[in-house]
Length: 299
Image (tube, rainbow, N blue to C red; front, side, top):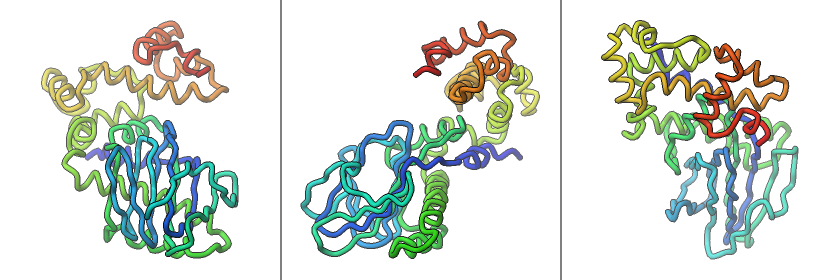
């Protein structure tokens, strides 16, 4: 049986934009800026922290993990304090993307690990885009060992601390998403639900693995041992759009990613996605994305 959802999780490879180990003394506050195309994560390893996002305030306890998949602006605080944008506060940079922040009013200490990460693969980006605006998991048994390791690293600066914390953070992000997928009914609807359907999930996995194939409804139906009409109806019902429209849109997701590679020409991207001519690819790209491939690359 094809595990299309498992394949999508496998592609959640992150490139860290910013990791920060925080030592915060009450009262304290900091605003996380809007980070387009990024996911913010916060892991409270000790102390107390409130998070205000989208008008909702969530109180974290040690061992809790909170994700902001859309990367939107939000505020972390405890007690009555100003909340300057975190990028304006003085950091001790260990490397270009790893820093230590010490901030606050001198009271009890909170240790918090935060970061903003990006995902490059189109399947990973699509998965992140369908997550809720805030994803919050109380300390779970299957995440406890990872969090305990992170808490130990967050207490003191030690050789290799950056490597340990950044890798543990990446693992925790995936564990948190997996926990939400396993426990929230919303994860069993729409595109996520389709990935977990035995037959439509198999079709999606085939498209994701090799978008350049000359897919047709008939071919996908055959691969999933369904009749053409039954496959077409079920695909549209679960995914929310017809199969061939999804194939084209998925190819454009992949194209957007490949156009970032300045070593690949538009013609090469077109051929790599199964288009016989650059003109045909460009027409499809503009119809789906709204701009030409050249404009997308320049932007």
